[in-house]
Image 1 (tube, rainbow, N blue to C red):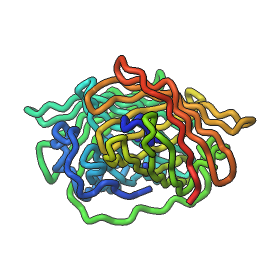
Image 2: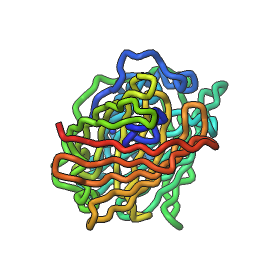
Image 3: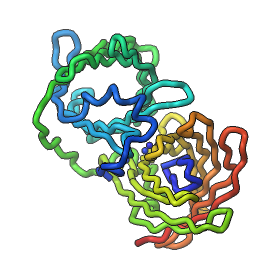
Length: 340
């Protein structure tokens, strides 16, 4: 789930650990995600490979952004090392499928996960394909099946696992109800992602956002972002009011894609829109140039070219061009982010 401060389309901004929009009425995506309702709460998560336990951790799930998304935050072991992570589950109205985007880190690396698949309401099983990109550029893939028929016991099967040409063992997750326990702390040492994110550290902070819509109406909003998971990711939340005065809340996360050698940003909003963008950074002009694609709440394809350019230590400009939603072209937008 970045920068969704434009056009009420939420082409942007996926993660400060709050639950934006708590208490709002469910959005349109909830109708397709309500099968996740039994997941709300705290869980003990045991991962096994055959008869061997390879991770014993916990996970907590909650609705966010008008129930347009569910957030799952947890900890356990990954390849024998303590890991902290969070998943975001949402609905893709274009493909009619359920997706997840996730980020996590150990004390020596990080990973980005994407899943996409269909839920079978008869069998109460969500089946998806998973891509897990590691911080060294390697990719792991698997077939994932979550069995959601029991509200107090959920199981997950991970099969067809591979890393390149290497076959990996299947593993099995068992979720049982638990009392929430604080995760073990990461040591705070910047991870490998920080080397690549450090040039855009000026994006981090608390911001007031102002601008003008094409019809002359004022644009207003706020954004708050910070480092997470040993500085392997920049994560944030924000809100803005669209042309009709409706408030849209959003979340986002920025990471370094070690395979594509680009910045990647996942984002989602309280209207159910969501998308992913990739970017390059020009250090000479201090400009981050994104190409963004997204899906609207109605299932239309959206796209945008975005530039974030540092003006001073307390100001940067946000310029959106080549806006498209379906077959429509929308006006350019320029916003000013001022440090609060």
